[in-house]
Every structure is written in C-alpha cells, then in structure tokens.
Length: 215
Image (tube, rainbow, N blue to C red):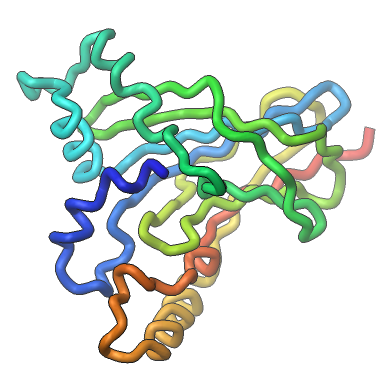
C-alpha cells in the first residue's frame, strides 16, 4: 500500500490524536458510455504541501528546488502511489442502491508537480457497466483508518452520457468528530492507538452522487 511512505511523519507527528496525517484534495470523474452506463472512474489526488515535499525530497527529485520537474523526473514520479497491497480498495468506494460495486485496480496513472503540490491521477473500471438513472451512483472517498483525510473541493466531472448531473455531498463533520471521540474513549491507556486506530474514516467520507435523466 502506498501509505507506507508517510511513516516518518507518523513517528514524528506527536500525539496520536493528530490523525489524520496526510490531506488529499480529490476530483472524481465518472466515465459513461452512450447508454448512460458508468464504465469507470478517473480519480485525481492532490497531496498537501508537506507530504508532497517529503515525497519529492525522498525520491531525489527537483534537486535545485525550483519547483519544476524535468520530463525524466515526472516519469520517475508517475506511479509512486500506485503500488497497492492486495486487498487495498484505493480509498475509493462506489455504491448503487446501497450495494457496493466492484472496481478494478488502477491503470493509466499520471503524476505532476506544481505549486509545491503533487497531483496524481488514475483510472479504475467497473466490473460491468453500471446503468445510471434516478437512483444515484455514489462515489465515496475515504481512508477507513483515517490516516489520510480526503476532501472533494473540485466540481465532479461527467464524461460521456446525456442528461446526467453530479453533485458533492459532505457529511456532518461535528457528528463525525463526536463519533471519533466516542470510539477513542473505548480504548484503554495501554493501547497503541497509532497501530490500532479505530476504523472511523467512513464517517468523514465526502461523496459524489450522479444521476441521469430517463432517455
């Protein structure tokens, strides 16, 4: 899983309640065919300044610190976060009528570095085309262990299809924070919370909901 690269920050982060450690701005693009069936997702991740700086330095990129990567360095950076361990869901979850949908592993990934931040993209395919109508296709982004905090500050993109719209929905963050505190209160002082942090990430999940008008 790509998150192992941030362990130095984890060890230096201070109190365990400093979760999350990494912050990612996400854009969701839904890929549709001409029958308004979702065939895949293109996911864009823009990493926070600190994590981006760590990765660039750790990989020996941008040695003159001018904020610009050469084409060779861009090629080296591409795919740095695509080394997923078996079973890793990619922190992206798709649902239809509350039923989870199967997504493939990543393909066609890219990466770039601008404004002190790394942005990477990748495509994931649905196991079978998903018809979209009045019942929304929901795409959620979250890390179950809340080590990484995902947000969706960008407008979702719909590529293909006709009569389809997508909106971003944000959870009640006060209620999410309260649920986190209640989960932490169940642990005894001798528990290593960094290793055993409760799986509360779904409570903080922002999501895109896509619907399509009847043909």
